[in-house]
Length: 197
Figure 1 (cartoon, one colour):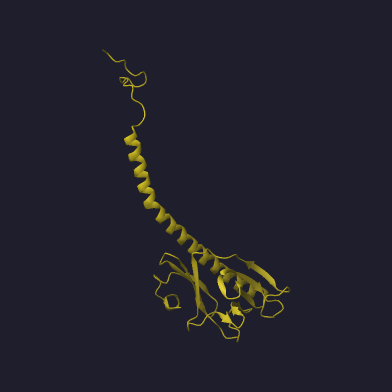
Figure 2: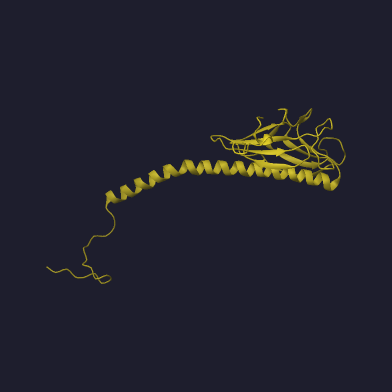
């Protein structure tokens, strides 16, 4: 018996269309294997992206605090939303009434919410003391743009951000004249970035 050629491609019509059950199972198994390998990588990528975004946001806030202090000619503070925990977010304000605390007379320049729960924060200075005063952690700039401790001495330091389940870290380093930068302590061997906190 002769078969008729398929009208589109000239091939004989076999009557077989679609996939067999075995072919479908093999394809589904391959997709599952590929996804199981990709999901941990995507999760790590997301955590590291959040880490870099948090550190960059902190750096931008410090730079904004310094710029506002120089523009307004008054002390400007960056403080945690909670008195002692940078992970709760931060507020930058110009201390218009010179009370060394945020009051209704001061100008709030920016405020951020809490950072991602898997991101950690460690703060420190060259002498392993924290950016801290009697009222809690802070970063303070005078009208000249210099970072100051509560006693008026020039103060530099570093804030380090890490992420749960990763060795990835980023530091925001502030020197005693007010310059800030972002660095990776695992790759940057300069003293201000590589020192233990």
